[in-house]
Length: 330
Image (tube, rainbow, N blue to C red; front, top):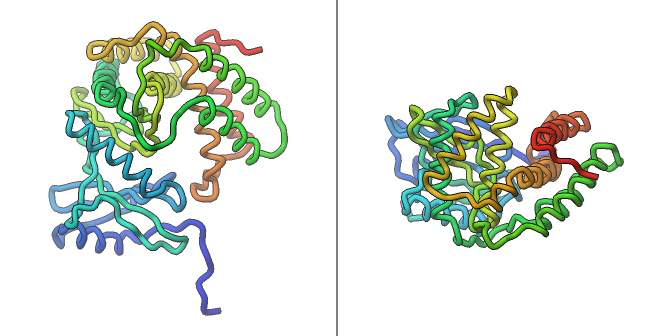
């Protein structure tokens, strides 16, 4: 059999990518490229002497070139306005997006600056304060900044997401019934929210320890804006708090860090009462969305844990958050 068997998902050779990057970005012959993570997107660490970069290869049929261009437009806007973010780097032809003919079809790659500092889930309350300040500065630049990308609302976060999750699991379970009930409850919360005092613009939607580096608890750099879109800015705040809650089992530790984060944020920008009231609910809608993304992208991002037990664990985390905030649904 001489023809190559078709594939739906491949891992690109670091050696061949190294040659491509070296040539396109005019790097030295000391350049090295190593696979760092093969998840939703594939990340490669690129080093050229003392210089360090991240090359992201988007999975097949995940983002269009126009969606990526909008992500990069946002990052360039943030960089130009003093936002602490990992930013795209243009090649010799002043292009930021590389087209790669992978076995499964055309994929896109982008070279990013490397974020200063290190990644950790066990940061202090002082670091939490600094993260709050850094996110507020990002939001100062993204308020009223519109992207030609997804809008995060009840349709995208709740209705469409629930359908995707149901299609993946097929059989109706107590956990799916819970998600359905939760979706209806949250739709009412979104629809009845007083939108006037709630700031709106471009959002990250995935702000948590895995997408930031902290440098000596004094400086924070955000990266991975792959899920950026349009929505209430408080969605980012809520999601960070939810992830902080998930990684701090001791609720007293969480409370201290959460208060510190919010104080840090409000040294830069005020969070309205309406936004604060909305925080306990917003992250639940976001998690509903991310559950559906795992289901939808299973073939391209094979999560070996994605089964009914995994869903139960995720819903257990949602219920723990709801119990903490005394949220009850009928």
